[in-house]
Amino acid sequence: MADSFQLEPLFLRDLYQNKPERPSWSTTFGATCAEAAAVCLEEQGHRDRVSLQVEGMQQGEIEVLWDATDETIRRFNADEEVATEYGAYAIAALLIHI
Image (cartoon, rainbow, N blue to C red):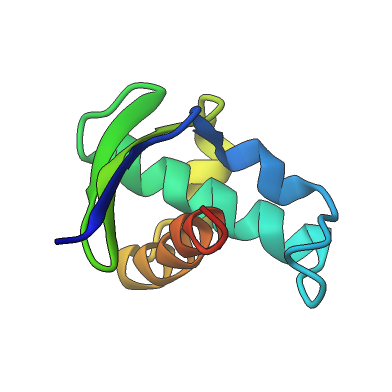
């Protein structure tokens, strides 16, 4: 049976910063992915946070928080398929080191 965990909230804005666990990510790419994730989550009716169930080698629940998007961010992420891809990168980048 997989181990279970409950973590402190994860913030999409952390992807705007250089971190040792993401040595090959630029802050620009991190911000782009974080904003895409926020747009996708808001489009699904989530206001500024969401709880996600994680399954695999470890199981548990995480809470992801973000800053509200604006019209410019939503227009930049108007292509739903691309926004979903980049948003998934953002969530994966937050999860990879839990």
